[in-house]
Length: 61
Figure 1 (tube, rainbow, N blue to C red):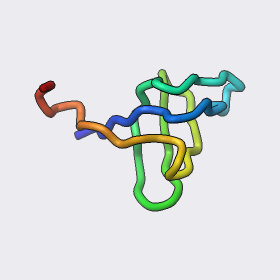
Figure 2: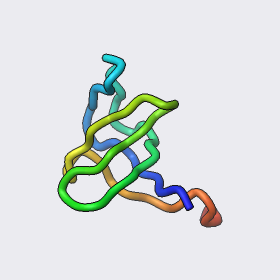
Figure 3: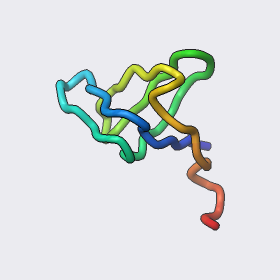
């Protein structure tokens, strides 16, 4: 089950690409810092940079 979140601020990925607020990211890990991924690009995320949403297998409302 993949967890999804939404960026609340602009975040730079390891590739150097900057992703704007509202970008959907795949989230891995828990706590104050987690790993985020967008199309294979790794984004080291702090707790305040994203909002966790639904899981990929959950039905949309």
